[in-house]
Structures are given as C-alpha cells and as structure tokens.
Amino acid sequence: MAGASLLTLLDDIATILDDVAVMTKVAAKKTAGVLGDDLALNAEQVNGVRAERELPVVWAVAVGSLKNKIILVPAALAISAFIPWAVIPLLMVGGLYLCFEGVEKLAHKFFPHAEEENHEALITAISDENVDLVSLEKDKIKGAIRTDFVLSAEIIVIALGTVADKSLSTQFIVLAGIGVIMTIGVYGLVAGIVKLDDIGFYLQKKTNGALKTVGAMLVATAPKLMKLLTVVGTAAMFLVGGGILTHGIPQLHHGIEHLAAESGNVMAAVIPSAMNLLVGVLAGAIALAAVALGSKLFGKK
Picture (tube, rainbow, N blue to C red):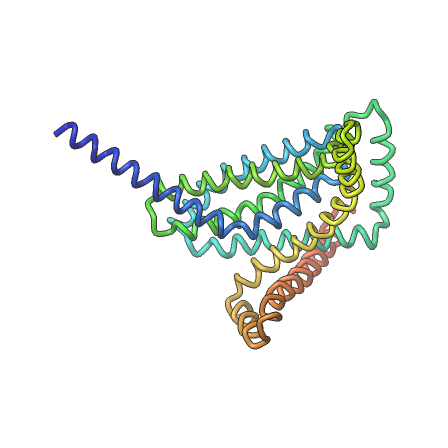
C-alpha cells in the first residue's frame, strides 16, 4: 500500500510538472510580444551611461525587475482571486503612466528649456572623475524600474490569463517561472546590446581578418542601434500604454477591431498598432497637461 501510494504521489507530481511546463510554454508565447517592447524600452533606458557603468546599471535594473515581479506575482494572484474586476483598471493606470512618460520624453526633446541646464550640469559632473557616478545614475535606474513595473505587470496578467483555470500552486509556479525567464532574457539581451561596441573593439584587436571585419561592423553598428532603440523604446511606450488603454475600453477596442476587419489583410495588421499609438500619444499629452496644470496650481510657490 505504501509503495502504491508513493507511486501515485510521484505520478501526481509528474502530471503537475508536465502541466506547469506546458502552461509556461503557452504563457511565454503569449507574452513574447510584450518582451520585444520590454527589450526596446530597457535598452533605451540605459542609453547615455558611461561605458564602464553600463553593466552595473543593467544589473541594478534587473535586480529591481526581479523585485517588481516578487511583488507582482502574489499581488496578481490575490487580485485575481478576490477582486478580479480591479485587474483592468490597475493595468490602465499603468498604461496611462507609460503614455505620460513617452510624451514627457518627447517634450524634453523638442522643448528642452529648463532641462538644458540640468543636462549641462550632468555633462560637467560626468567629466569630473571625482564625482560619484553611482549617485548620478540613481534617477535613471529608478525610472527604468518604474517602467519595468508596468511592463512586468502586463506580462504577469497575460500569463495569468493562460492558467486562470488551474490550481493556485500551478498558477504561482507558472507566473514565477515566466517572471524569471523574462527578466533573464530581457536584461541578458540588454547587456549584450549595450556592450556591442566593446565586443567590436575586442574583435578588432584579433589577427584574424574575418574577426576584425566583424569587429569593425559591430563598432559602426552599435551607436546606430542605440539611437534606433531610443526611438523604438519611446514608440513602445505609446504602443504598449495605448494598447492597454484601448483594451480597457470595450467599445473602443471593438471599434478598432471592426475597422481593421473592414480594411483588408494589410491594413488589418497596421490599423490596431496605429490606433494604439494614436491613443497612447493623446492620452500621454492629456496626462502631461494635467500634471503641468496641477503643478502650477498646487506646486510650491
């Protein structure tokens, strides 16, 4: 009897592990789209950091991302179990925050004004070897972790949707697994991207002609890739944030789907993203205007 019970237990454990593996694979596929946006955003967030501080900054943000997921996984399970109606509103708040950050970046780029003094002060500080660069990086790291929190929340919620009908233990294991896999994947790639130029310089020192050529290509490509990721990262804020907002408003979401369905195969793929981008920009502009107005009315004199 004892042997039979043990075999039954082992069979149950094997079944659970098999379910977890299958559901984790499904969840990973569903969150792959967000992974691309997450990669672009986080690579853009560490742009502009001094070369010797790039990996420490990526590591700091990765640790912050893991902490985000330690908070988000149990929170998502609790909200889903006790107040499932709150999931969409909370995601929409996060989406609006992403849109706000995107418009704020554009505002600082096209209307720098007061930001110019801060930028000049930062350049002066970076050129001073006696300045503690870690303290200067704290704001950048905090901003990246805040952005990661919203994207991580979306990943966790999408993954939760794939295991909503499973046991609590399976849900927890799948969400925790997705959180770890996504964090390692995103920040491993970000670390590789920001060090492309260093890899290129290293290869250029080799005697092999092919390696030297590859090294030269990497050195030439790295700055262009980082500039591209800056643009893609900002656009991703609007696409992800706008997408969350449109999905949270059923009438708008169904209207976009209907418009896409009536527009042919090519436009059916373009219209949803274009509308998400438009909604993201408009929502971010409204949020930025509201924050600016609030600062004038209630800010310090």
